[in-house]
Length: 54
Image (tube, rainbow, N blue to C red; front, side):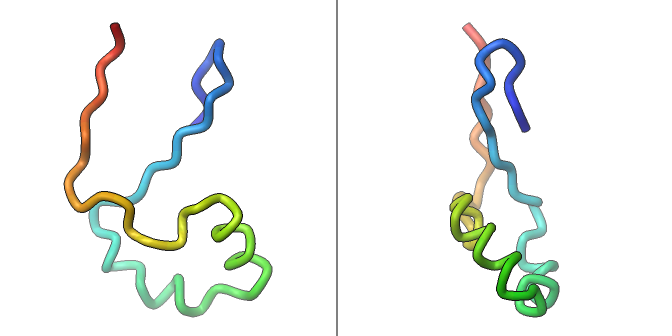
């Protein structure tokens, strides 16, 4: 997701991360490389952290 105005990028993971294990394992090398570059190849947080604007 891109934040309007700042163009900051936010990466989100599905709450059912484990459900998509098989799809991640079947990804081709190029897709895995892009995910690694973006830093989204592993579960970052087990519980969502809500952030509120100030």
